[in-house]
Length: 342
Image (cartoon, rainbow, N blue to C red; front, side, top):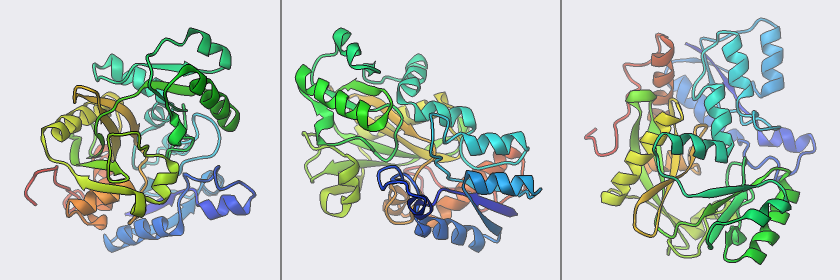
Protein backbone atom coordinates (compact mmCIF):
# COMPACT_ATOMS: atom_id res chain seq x y z
CA UNK A 1 0.00 0.00 0.00
CA UNK A 2 1.03 3.61 -0.53
CA UNK A 3 0.74 5.24 2.88
CA UNK A 4 1.21 8.94 3.56
CA UNK A 5 2.02 10.13 7.07
CA UNK A 6 0.58 13.42 8.29
CA UNK A 7 2.07 14.93 11.43
CA UNK A 8 3.11 18.13 13.16
CA UNK A 9 6.82 18.21 13.86
CA UNK A 10 7.65 20.26 16.94
CA UNK A 11 10.94 21.55 15.55
CA UNK A 12 9.13 22.99 12.52
CA UNK A 13 6.83 25.08 14.72
CA UNK A 14 9.69 26.17 17.02
CA UNK A 15 11.54 27.39 13.93
CA UNK A 16 8.45 29.41 12.98
CA UNK A 17 8.51 31.21 16.34
CA UNK A 18 6.00 29.25 18.40
CA UNK A 19 6.89 28.61 22.04
CA UNK A 20 7.79 25.33 23.73
CA UNK A 21 4.44 25.40 25.55
CA UNK A 22 2.46 25.96 22.35
CA UNK A 23 4.21 23.04 20.67
CA UNK A 24 4.17 20.63 23.60
CA UNK A 25 1.76 18.19 21.90
CA UNK A 26 3.71 17.96 18.66
CA UNK A 27 5.94 15.11 17.63
CA UNK A 28 9.67 14.55 17.45
CA UNK A 29 11.54 13.04 14.48
CA UNK A 30 11.93 9.89 16.60
CA UNK A 31 8.17 9.31 16.46
CA UNK A 32 7.92 9.86 12.71
CA UNK A 33 10.96 7.64 12.13
CA UNK A 34 9.40 4.95 14.32
CA UNK A 35 6.08 4.93 12.46
CA UNK A 36 7.71 5.15 9.02
CA UNK A 37 10.10 2.35 9.90
CA UNK A 38 7.32 0.08 11.13
CA UNK A 39 5.24 0.74 8.01
CA UNK A 40 8.23 0.14 5.73
CA UNK A 41 9.10 -3.11 7.47
CA UNK A 42 5.49 -4.19 6.95
CA UNK A 43 6.06 -3.81 3.21
CA UNK A 44 4.34 -0.48 2.58
CA UNK A 45 5.52 2.39 0.42
CA UNK A 46 5.74 5.35 2.78
CA UNK A 47 5.60 9.08 2.07
CA UNK A 48 6.19 11.63 4.84
CA UNK A 49 3.67 14.36 4.01
CA UNK A 50 3.84 16.67 7.07
CA UNK A 51 1.18 18.97 8.52
CA UNK A 52 -1.87 20.85 7.27
CA UNK A 53 -0.09 23.22 4.87
CA UNK A 54 1.92 20.37 3.31
CA UNK A 55 -1.22 18.27 2.92
CA UNK A 56 -3.15 21.11 1.27
CA UNK A 57 -0.26 21.62 -1.15
CA UNK A 58 -0.07 17.90 -1.90
CA UNK A 59 -3.82 17.58 -2.50
CA UNK A 60 -3.83 20.66 -4.71
CA UNK A 61 -1.07 19.04 -6.75
CA UNK A 62 -3.25 15.97 -7.22
CA UNK A 63 -1.31 13.60 -4.97
CA UNK A 64 -3.12 10.83 -3.16
CA UNK A 65 -2.45 7.68 -1.14
CA UNK A 66 -4.18 4.38 -0.42
CA UNK A 67 -4.21 5.35 3.26
CA UNK A 68 -2.98 8.24 5.36
CA UNK A 69 -1.51 7.47 8.79
CA UNK A 70 -2.60 10.65 10.53
CA UNK A 71 -1.16 11.82 13.85
CA UNK A 72 -1.31 15.58 13.21
CA UNK A 73 -2.52 17.55 16.25
CA UNK A 74 -3.12 20.91 14.55
CA UNK A 75 -2.49 24.33 16.06
CA UNK A 76 -5.63 26.45 16.30
CA UNK A 77 -9.14 26.03 17.70
CA UNK A 78 -11.32 23.23 19.00
CA UNK A 79 -11.35 21.61 15.55
CA UNK A 80 -7.57 21.53 15.14
CA UNK A 81 -7.28 17.73 15.37
CA UNK A 82 -10.24 17.30 13.00
CA UNK A 83 -9.00 19.43 10.11
CA UNK A 84 -6.78 16.90 8.35
CA UNK A 85 -9.25 13.98 8.66
CA UNK A 86 -11.97 16.31 7.33
CA UNK A 87 -9.87 17.25 4.29
CA UNK A 88 -9.05 13.61 3.61
CA UNK A 89 -12.68 12.61 4.09
CA UNK A 90 -13.75 15.25 1.59
CA UNK A 91 -11.28 13.85 -0.95
CA UNK A 92 -12.31 10.25 -0.29
CA UNK A 93 -8.91 9.29 1.12
CA UNK A 94 -8.93 6.82 3.99
CA UNK A 95 -6.99 7.63 7.15
CA UNK A 96 -6.15 6.01 10.44
CA UNK A 97 -7.77 6.90 13.75
CA UNK A 98 -11.02 8.67 14.44
CA UNK A 99 -13.12 10.79 12.11
CA UNK A 100 -13.41 14.59 12.40
CA UNK A 101 -16.48 14.46 14.63
CA UNK A 102 -14.96 12.15 17.23
CA UNK A 103 -11.67 14.08 17.27
CA UNK A 104 -13.43 17.40 17.78
CA UNK A 105 -15.69 16.00 20.50
CA UNK A 106 -12.81 14.36 22.37
CA UNK A 107 -10.63 17.46 22.26
CA UNK A 108 -13.32 19.43 24.12
CA UNK A 109 -13.42 17.67 27.48
CA UNK A 110 -16.82 18.92 28.76
CA UNK A 111 -18.48 17.85 25.50
CA UNK A 112 -16.78 14.45 25.79
CA UNK A 113 -18.10 14.04 29.31
CA UNK A 114 -21.63 14.96 28.27
CA UNK A 115 -21.56 12.34 25.49
CA UNK A 116 -20.31 9.51 27.69
CA UNK A 117 -22.63 10.54 30.53
CA UNK A 118 -25.63 10.37 28.20
CA UNK A 119 -24.45 6.89 27.17
CA UNK A 120 -24.55 5.78 30.80
CA UNK A 121 -20.79 5.86 31.42
CA UNK A 122 -20.11 7.41 34.85
CA UNK A 123 -17.90 10.49 34.95
CA UNK A 124 -17.24 12.98 37.77
CA UNK A 125 -19.61 15.91 38.18
CA UNK A 126 -18.18 19.04 36.62
CA UNK A 127 -18.59 22.73 35.89
CA UNK A 128 -17.25 24.90 33.09
CA UNK A 129 -15.78 28.27 34.08
CA UNK A 130 -15.72 30.51 31.02
CA UNK A 131 -15.38 33.77 32.95
CA UNK A 132 -14.59 34.56 36.55
CA UNK A 133 -18.26 35.49 37.04
CA UNK A 134 -19.15 31.81 36.56
CA UNK A 135 -17.58 31.09 39.94
CA UNK A 136 -20.52 32.86 41.60
CA UNK A 137 -22.72 29.85 40.94
CA UNK A 138 -20.06 27.21 41.60
CA UNK A 139 -21.56 24.44 43.75
CA UNK A 140 -19.26 21.39 43.59
CA UNK A 141 -17.83 20.22 46.91
CA UNK A 142 -14.09 20.58 47.45
CA UNK A 143 -11.56 19.25 46.60
CA UNK A 144 -11.91 19.71 42.85
CA UNK A 145 -9.57 19.41 39.88
CA UNK A 146 -9.16 22.24 37.36
CA UNK A 147 -7.66 22.15 33.85
CA UNK A 148 -8.18 23.78 30.41
CA UNK A 149 -11.13 22.39 28.46
CA UNK A 150 -9.20 21.57 25.30
CA UNK A 151 -5.52 20.84 25.81
CA UNK A 152 -3.62 17.57 25.45
CA UNK A 153 -0.46 16.19 27.03
CA UNK A 154 -1.68 17.60 30.37
CA UNK A 155 -0.92 21.15 29.27
CA UNK A 156 -2.16 23.52 31.95
CA UNK A 157 -2.20 20.78 34.59
CA UNK A 158 0.13 21.42 37.54
CA UNK A 159 0.29 20.54 41.20
CA UNK A 160 -2.07 23.47 41.87
CA UNK A 161 -4.77 21.89 39.68
CA UNK A 162 -5.90 19.99 42.76
CA UNK A 163 -7.94 22.72 44.47
CA UNK A 164 -9.04 22.68 48.12
CA UNK A 165 -11.07 25.87 48.58
CA UNK A 166 -12.87 28.71 46.81
CA UNK A 167 -10.01 31.19 47.08
CA UNK A 168 -7.56 28.75 45.51
CA UNK A 169 -10.08 27.91 42.78
CA UNK A 170 -10.43 31.58 41.85
CA UNK A 171 -6.65 31.92 41.66
CA UNK A 172 -6.23 28.80 39.50
CA UNK A 173 -9.10 29.69 37.15
CA UNK A 174 -7.81 33.23 36.65
CA UNK A 175 -4.36 31.88 35.76
CA UNK A 176 -5.69 29.20 33.38
CA UNK A 177 -8.11 31.56 31.63
CA UNK A 178 -5.31 34.03 30.99
CA UNK A 179 -2.73 31.46 29.93
CA UNK A 180 -4.83 29.30 27.63
CA UNK A 181 -7.57 31.61 26.28
CA UNK A 182 -10.24 28.97 26.78
CA UNK A 183 -12.67 27.95 29.58
CA UNK A 184 -11.63 25.86 32.55
CA UNK A 185 -13.07 22.41 33.30
CA UNK A 186 -13.55 21.88 37.03
CA UNK A 187 -14.36 18.33 38.15
CA UNK A 188 -15.06 16.69 41.46
CA UNK A 189 -11.70 15.26 42.54
CA UNK A 190 -11.45 11.48 42.68
CA UNK A 191 -8.97 10.20 45.28
CA UNK A 192 -8.58 6.64 43.98
CA UNK A 193 -6.19 4.79 41.68
CA UNK A 194 -5.36 6.31 38.29
CA UNK A 195 -5.39 4.17 35.16
CA UNK A 196 -4.90 4.70 31.46
CA UNK A 197 -6.42 1.99 29.30
CA UNK A 198 -4.92 1.08 25.91
CA UNK A 199 -7.53 0.28 23.28
CA UNK A 200 -7.36 -1.03 19.72
CA UNK A 201 -10.21 -1.50 17.29
CA UNK A 202 -13.47 0.21 16.45
CA UNK A 203 -17.10 -0.30 17.43
CA UNK A 204 -17.95 -3.81 18.54
CA UNK A 205 -14.37 -4.93 17.81
CA UNK A 206 -12.80 -2.40 20.17
CA UNK A 207 -10.94 -4.05 23.03
CA UNK A 208 -8.55 -3.22 25.83
CA UNK A 209 -4.94 -4.32 25.26
CA UNK A 210 -3.79 -3.36 28.73
CA UNK A 211 -4.57 -1.26 31.80
CA UNK A 212 -1.63 0.77 33.07
CA UNK A 213 -1.67 2.17 36.57
CA UNK A 214 0.07 5.51 37.00
CA UNK A 215 1.88 5.94 40.32
CA UNK A 216 3.23 9.45 40.67
CA UNK A 217 6.24 9.62 42.98
CA UNK A 218 5.75 5.92 43.62
CA UNK A 219 2.90 6.72 45.97
CA UNK A 220 -0.19 7.32 43.83
CA UNK A 221 -3.61 8.06 45.19
CA UNK A 222 -2.43 10.99 47.30
CA UNK A 223 -2.05 14.62 46.33
CA UNK A 224 0.50 13.65 43.70
CA UNK A 225 -0.61 14.97 40.30
CA UNK A 226 0.18 13.37 36.94
CA UNK A 227 0.79 16.71 35.25
CA UNK A 228 2.78 18.03 32.30
CA UNK A 229 5.98 18.52 34.33
CA UNK A 230 5.76 15.04 35.83
CA UNK A 231 5.35 13.50 32.38
CA UNK A 232 8.51 15.25 31.20
CA UNK A 233 10.43 13.64 34.09
CA UNK A 234 8.54 10.38 34.15
CA UNK A 235 11.65 8.21 34.52
CA UNK A 236 12.34 9.76 37.94
CA UNK A 237 8.86 10.69 39.11
CA UNK A 238 6.39 8.14 37.74
CA UNK A 239 6.05 4.39 38.03
CA UNK A 240 3.94 2.52 35.50
CA UNK A 241 2.78 -1.05 35.76
CA UNK A 242 0.13 -3.19 34.15
CA UNK A 243 -2.80 -3.77 36.49
CA UNK A 244 -4.89 -6.92 36.15
CA UNK A 245 -6.95 -6.99 39.34
CA UNK A 246 -10.73 -6.60 39.55
CA UNK A 247 -10.62 -2.79 39.76
CA UNK A 248 -8.39 -2.62 36.68
CA UNK A 249 -10.71 -4.94 34.79
CA UNK A 250 -13.68 -2.73 35.72
CA UNK A 251 -11.70 0.28 34.48
CA UNK A 252 -11.03 -1.51 31.18
CA UNK A 253 -14.72 -2.30 30.69
CA UNK A 254 -15.71 1.31 31.38
CA UNK A 255 -13.00 2.58 29.02
CA UNK A 256 -14.21 0.38 26.15
CA UNK A 257 -17.80 1.50 26.79
CA UNK A 258 -16.70 5.14 26.58
CA UNK A 259 -14.61 4.45 23.46
CA UNK A 260 -17.64 2.99 21.71
CA UNK A 261 -19.96 5.79 22.92
CA UNK A 262 -17.59 8.35 21.42
CA UNK A 263 -17.25 6.31 18.20
CA UNK A 264 -13.46 6.36 18.44
CA UNK A 265 -11.52 4.20 16.00
CA UNK A 266 -8.42 2.08 15.48
CA UNK A 267 -6.40 2.80 18.64
CA UNK A 268 -6.01 5.18 21.54
CA UNK A 269 -6.29 5.51 25.29
CA UNK A 270 -8.99 6.27 27.83
CA UNK A 271 -8.05 7.71 31.22
CA UNK A 272 -9.98 6.38 34.21
CA UNK A 273 -9.83 7.15 37.91
CA UNK A 274 -11.44 5.40 40.88
CA UNK A 275 -13.70 7.33 43.22
CA UNK A 276 -13.69 7.17 47.01
CA UNK A 277 -15.63 3.88 46.83
CA UNK A 278 -13.24 2.24 44.37
CA UNK A 279 -15.62 2.64 41.44
CA UNK A 280 -14.16 3.60 38.02
CA UNK A 281 -15.07 6.95 36.48
CA UNK A 282 -14.30 8.24 32.98
CA UNK A 283 -11.84 11.15 32.90
CA UNK A 284 -10.98 11.70 29.23
CA UNK A 285 -10.37 9.96 25.91
CA UNK A 286 -7.25 10.18 23.76
CA UNK A 287 -8.27 9.10 20.24
CA UNK A 288 -5.06 10.50 18.72
CA UNK A 289 -2.53 8.86 21.05
CA UNK A 290 1.13 9.70 21.32
CA UNK A 291 3.22 7.15 19.43
CA UNK A 292 6.77 7.93 20.49
CA UNK A 293 8.27 4.42 20.55
CA UNK A 294 9.76 4.87 24.03
CA UNK A 295 8.00 7.68 25.90
CA UNK A 296 4.32 7.63 24.88
CA UNK A 297 1.76 5.90 27.08
CA UNK A 298 0.24 3.58 24.46
CA UNK A 299 3.62 2.15 23.36
CA UNK A 300 4.55 1.84 27.05
CA UNK A 301 1.38 -0.19 27.68
CA UNK A 302 2.28 -2.40 24.73
CA UNK A 303 5.87 -2.82 25.90
CA UNK A 304 4.76 -3.79 29.40
CA UNK A 305 2.40 -6.34 27.84
CA UNK A 306 5.02 -7.84 25.52
CA UNK A 307 3.57 -6.26 22.37
CA UNK A 308 6.19 -4.90 19.99
CA UNK A 309 5.93 -1.37 18.58
CA UNK A 310 5.73 -2.70 15.02
CA UNK A 311 2.80 -4.91 16.03
CA UNK A 312 0.94 -1.88 17.39
CA UNK A 313 1.48 0.11 14.19
CA UNK A 314 0.38 -2.85 12.06
CA UNK A 315 -2.75 -3.25 14.20
CA UNK A 316 -3.66 0.41 13.67
CA UNK A 317 -3.28 0.05 9.90
CA UNK A 318 -5.15 -3.25 9.90
CA UNK A 319 -8.06 -1.69 11.77
CA UNK A 320 -8.24 1.23 9.35
CA UNK A 321 -8.05 -1.10 6.34
CA UNK A 322 -10.85 -3.26 7.69
CA UNK A 323 -13.07 -0.22 8.34
CA UNK A 324 -12.43 1.22 4.91
CA UNK A 325 -12.55 -1.99 2.90
CA UNK A 326 -8.90 -1.71 1.89
CA UNK A 327 -6.74 -4.70 1.05
CA UNK A 328 -4.20 -3.94 3.74
CA UNK A 329 -2.43 -6.14 6.20
CA UNK A 330 -5.43 -7.49 8.06
CA UNK A 331 -3.85 -10.93 8.05
CA UNK A 332 -0.83 -9.80 10.07
CA UNK A 333 -2.14 -6.83 12.01
CA UNK A 334 -4.06 -8.59 14.75
CA UNK A 335 -3.13 -7.60 18.28
CA UNK A 336 -4.36 -9.65 21.25
CA UNK A 337 -6.70 -8.28 23.90
CA UNK A 338 -5.41 -7.96 27.44
CA UNK A 339 -5.23 -11.41 29.00
CA UNK A 340 -5.25 -13.29 25.70
CA UNK A 341 -2.54 -15.85 25.08
CA UNK A 342 -0.37 -14.68 22.20
